Amino acid sequence: MTTLLDVAGLSKGFGGLQAVNDCSFTVERGAIAGLIGPNGAGKTTAFNMISGVLRPDAGAVLVDGVDITGMMPHKVARRGVGRTFQITRELGDLTVLENMVVPTARGRLSGLFGARMLRDEEERAMELLDFVGISRLADEKARNLSFGQRKLLEFASALMADPTLLLLDEPAGGVNPALLERMMERIRTLNEQGLTFLIVEHNMDVVMNLCRSIVVMAHGEVVLTGSPAVVQNDDRVLDAYLGKV
Amino acid sequence: MTRQRVEPSVIAVERGPSRRRSRGPLAAVATIVLLLTLLPLARPLIGQPYNYVLQIGMVGLMWIALASSWNIIGGFAGYISLGHNVFYGIGGYASGLLLLYFDWSPLLTWPIAGLLAVICGFLVGLVTLRTRGPAFIISTVALLLMVALLFDNWEFVGASNGLSLPLPPFSIETVKIPFYYAMLLIAVGSVYLSYRVAHSKFGLALRAIAQDETKAEVGGIDTRKMKVTAFSISAFFVGAAGAVWGYSLTYLRPAIFFSIAIAAEMVLMAIIGGRGTVAGPVVGAILLVTLNEISVSQFGSTELNIVVTGVIMLVVLLFFPMGVVGTLRERGKLPSILDWD
Image (cartoon, rainbow over all chains, first blue to last red; front, side, top):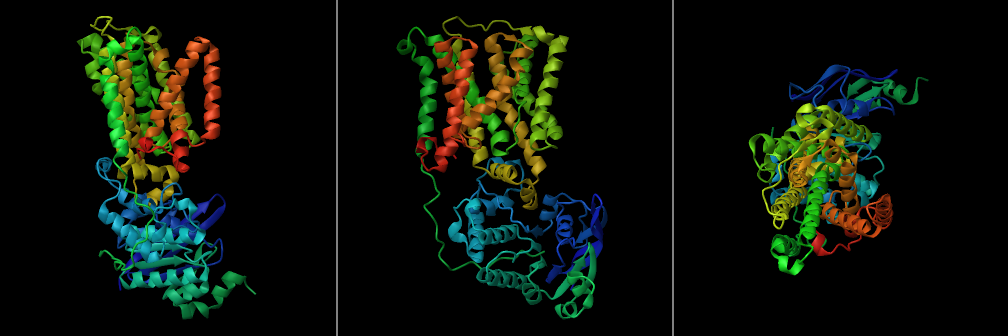
């Protein structure tokens, strides 16, 4: 296995708060990796730095051996890194289908003269909406979707860009059990097809079920990296969540 | 890197009513444009107020062009520019100077004026579009004030006295006709541009930017490039309209072109008609020009007509919070003749 994502010594502070401090971990190609830790551990900040939304104070992010540190998010996205947001960011005034095809509007000014949506793009978008089970909502304004449906749309639209690495920020948060089951199954299917995942999640059932390697963060630092079995039996993890006894 | 493909689904896709549109609006728009083209030939029908009708027609077409152009950056991309008449002035002065120094008619050089406006828009956009929201609005106002100050003191363009242009070489009976046609061309061009934006990937990117810039970026869209492009192409027909308008006045003065009232009017027209729709700015422009004309004729050119216009606008926005076209579409009551998106 080769390393797809290499996070080396990332740090980020906001004023007096050191959100992420010298954080290093790797994700192997083809893996489903988990990133866990109590609230405020710096998981989302780490995601934001990897995807280019935030610029790190120090450290580097390498994808497939290429340094992408400090690149604009659209450049990171074009290198095959997709992401979803913990609090979904659907484009409310656009229809679900339009939300899906936004990643195809990356291009050149020639985009002014072509169609808004090519037939194959529409087909691909409908296929993905079908895949997550919300294709019947294609023409609905995204703002009319329920919370769970927004999570699914967020997931599907990230897939639209054909990423090689997908960062999921709490895909299970607030999603009902039936939907959760579907989400996990979809993640597994995509992983079998070669997509690499890094998942931030609080639901331990999901994490232990899906992930073969887990990074545990607390107070902005990586506490431990290992398999679910290792993580579950390490006192440091318990300490991180419950405080030292 | 291999592309991952999801297995094509065998489940039949359920869909709402077809989103393919009819050819209805296209035929309607073509008819309107044809009628507008034929209007100057109807002198026997119009009779005495012929020049007045063409003048009002030209003014209406100009505002359609200005509001539609503004709508590209202000409506689709959601960046409110209150300094867009900078390009109007740049276009007016550029063509005026070409007339004075080279004897080239602004009726022919308006595309040059438009291109110059695009170049200026690009350079300005590189700076002002680093900001967003209220900061962007203020930066465009600052730009307008700076350019106004520059033209007020620039001797080469006559400073605050402006420049007088030679009279157009037409008789009093026919003088309005070439101006009317030039403005018609500009208006049709800007509405078509607006239509292209609404129906293209470029427009989709702008609408994504208007909603959530971070999300657009994460979707792979170079938001900065898109915004600067939108800002500069939205300047083209504004500059072009300024060129034709300046020549029709036969004099150029900073106070005429660089008043913030002009920018405000573009914004109002687009908002009243419906921001981010193709037909909205057109409807807004027609509404406001008509309203203004009626209230001037009823109340004279006093402050009163401005009050009346203001009150009516408030009432319109009370009942059509997203503009006439935007609100009607939201309620599913938009006549198909106005459904250009």
